[in-house]
Amino acid sequence: MQQKWYQATELEVDSLGQNLHFYMETIEVSRLSALAFFAAGEERYKGERFYWQNREKTMTLVGLGHAHTIQNNEKNNRFDAVEAEWKRLTKNCVKGQAELQPILFGGFTFDPQNNVDGEWTDFPEAYFALATYQLVLRDDKAYVSIHLIASAAEADGQLEALRKERNHLIHAAQVKEVKMYAKPEITNYFEPYKDPYLASIDQVTALIKAKKADKVVIARSLALQFKEQVTSPQVLAQIIHEQPESYLFGLEWQDLLFFGASPERLVKVENGRAYSSCVAGSIQRGKTAEEDEAYGQSLLNDPKNGGEHQYVVDMIAETFRKNCVEMKIPDGPRLLKIRDIQHLFTPVEGQLNNEATILQLTKHLHPTPALGGVPRKEAMIAIRKYEPMNRGLYAAPIGWLDAEGNGEFAVAIRSAALLKDKAYLYAGGGIVADSEPQSEYEETLVKFRPMLRALGGQVHE
Image (cartoon, rainbow, N blue to C red; front, side):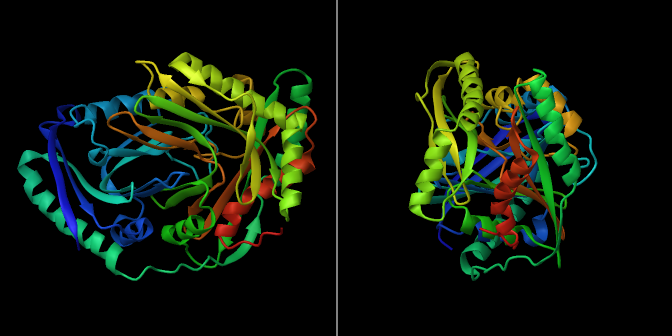
């Protein structure tokens, strides 16, 4: 196993406890499969792993084990609480060397006021992990970091044990034959809350016609029962193979894996510059290039989808104006085409002011009109009243940040929760005054396709 020793760092973190230190050690290794590294932690670290790959495929991140977790149920203060604890933990970190940065990965639930029981019962409103073993693939290089928070008296022995295990994990990922994962076998489908969902469309359109909101996003779930228990690597392998043009993510919490392939960036910060994506308005892909082009032009010229899209553009642009010293935004949308669906898409970017941070932007951007509605407050009230399920992390921010404030969050759509031998798929759509229950229902069927296909379901083209 070829590896290059990179750097070891010891930092004081007294605020976390008496005489605790934060130990980091990074080595550069020969390139390896990120999924194989994730799978190497199946026995020991199941329930404490994460996976991330950006849409451009320039950065892949895997975490095994928990050196430290940051989780809270602080409602509207959850973003600030995560930021404050992460800053305390990393205040002495070396700046300016991306390959040496500790990375915090996790997400915030869609609505901390939702207490509906189900697959998300007891899930924290904010849940982030600093991995014990962190793999970063970036610029055709691979770095594996050990993170340890311990007292100085215990650190030497613990670090030596962690180094041995790190070497075993790297060896397993590099040398063992890459496993070919079969798709799960589904024994039953059912649609929780189908009737309440259909009824909610009429209820929400009536609300909108009464001028109590302009747009409300209503979501629903599709539940699958498998023949046997399904593993995290098994489903991640499918989305890596089938959805290469999307943000790919997987986050474990106890027995639950939340995973997906999202086309939508919420916010990215790199060296003080912020980027976001306005993605709203959708139509199916065509069976031929000509049909696809016709669908795309129809979407670009459709006033309903154009209006939905403009709501998102206006809100994100306003957030950027408040947090940036300058910003750029195109005059109109273009098409974002992914495997099963095409969207209206407008990129936004700007230079952050001195007070703005990625978590502050995340706090102000979530939920966008594409996932909540317009106006935000009235839309959220309607969602709580008429949407019968708990979204959990669905449609919420998921992603990472480092000690320098760089990071990226996607909007966790095209996603599902895997819980042993069951899965729950999520999809929603923007309801406006002329929305019809059956057409909205059919739109969710298109949006279920990526996760349904990954989980072995039949997709009728």
